[in-house]
Each structure stands twice: as C-alpha cells, then as structure tokens.
Length: 262
Image (tube, rainbow, N blue to C red; front, side, top):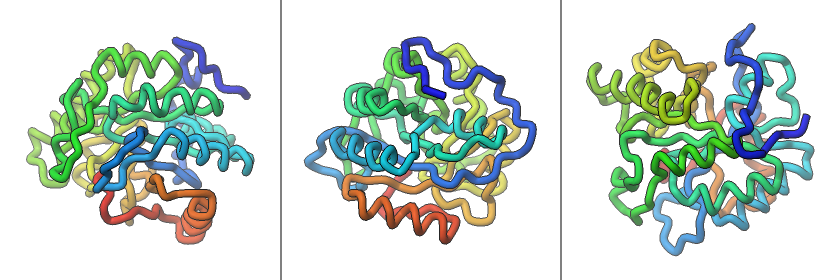
C-alpha cells in the first residue's frame, strides 16, 4: 500500500490498539541531525545526500522506511515484512530542510522524537557542541502535516535513570500531555534520552500510556517499551549498512558507537 504523503495525511487509519504484543522489529534506524556539518564530535549528523543514498540502499533491497507507529501497527497485523523503522532523535530544526524533502522523495515516513520543554531551544546537553537549533511548535506541526509521527524524547533531555520520581513523571507523562495537545492527537511513542533505561523508567513510560518505547541497546529489558535501534551516521555507506543489518540480525541487538549521545 503506498504511503499518503500529502499535507494532513494521517499515517495509519486504525487505532493504536495492538491485538498481540509486538516483537522487536528486525531493524530500526536511529538518526539525529541532517545537514552539512563541519564539526560533529558526537557523530550525530548525516548530510541530506548521504541520507538519500541510504534510503536508496533500502529501496534496492525491497525495504521501505516508515514511522515507528506504522511499523508497530504493521507488526500487530503480521504485515511488517519489508518495513524498516526510521527515527530521528532530539527534534533538530534541520529536519525540515534536510530530511523531510528526502523522505518524501523516497516515499518514506519517520518518527521524530522531540523535546517540548526545549521548543526553539538548542542541544545544550551536548557539552562539546556545536549548538544545533531545535524545532519549535510551528515546525513540529509542519512535519506532522506531511505524515511524520511526532513522539516524545522527554521534556528536556535528561537521564531518566538518575531522575527522582517527580522529575521522571514530569519528563514522561508531562511531555506526552504537552505534545498531544500540540499536535492534536495522542502521542504514542517515547524515546529514552541517551538510550538509558531501567525497569523503573519503563514502568513510568507504561503508566503514562505510551504504546512503545525506543532505546538503543536495552539489554534484557527488550520488548514493546524497550526497542533496540541501530545508529546510522555519515560514514555508513552501502557496505557498512549491509554489515550493520547482517550483524543486527545475527546478534539481535543494535550497534552503536560509544560517542552517540541519544
């Protein structure tokens, strides 16, 4: 079924109610920023040209990138074959110009994990810089109108495993409430800042009503609320992508460089 990428298109017409728990998807790609960067100490940036090359690589193998919501719903119906989850952490403003046109050209959708407590702010949590501007409310609504899923990365990008109970609830439940109001529909996805997750944090995400949660390598906590992902960067040309896909299937885990901040 082709993806409707017109403005106001809603990815997935059926309600987000799973008849059976989804298993871990075969492959979920983790991106961050999409622009031409001269300085990238955390290896979180890909150029638009590299993103296009990576999406073409998927297409040549009969794969199509979709949002996590679409992927999880397809898995619940047993129709996930040929789909790859595309996720973009932190909600960088460059998604609008750098990623959205490329995704639309290749018939893909994606999930953008945003920080409603830092609207129009920057990535102040990265001490080495450079400062990257984040999406504001208008930018978030804009990409949602083109079929991209908006999901939560917490309010302000803090390590939730070190947060006290009050801060944890605010970052998890509070961010869902703010985002749901902003986009006009229930937000179903959560992404753990830095990829850090434990049983207490998963319980908070479950209690907040999220349908799925994305980590990096959650270890024994894997499941619908702790899905592993593969970091994709500027150096991931076709041979590296093939190796990452093969290794992910062999080991059943995500491959990430130590420098990735989540």
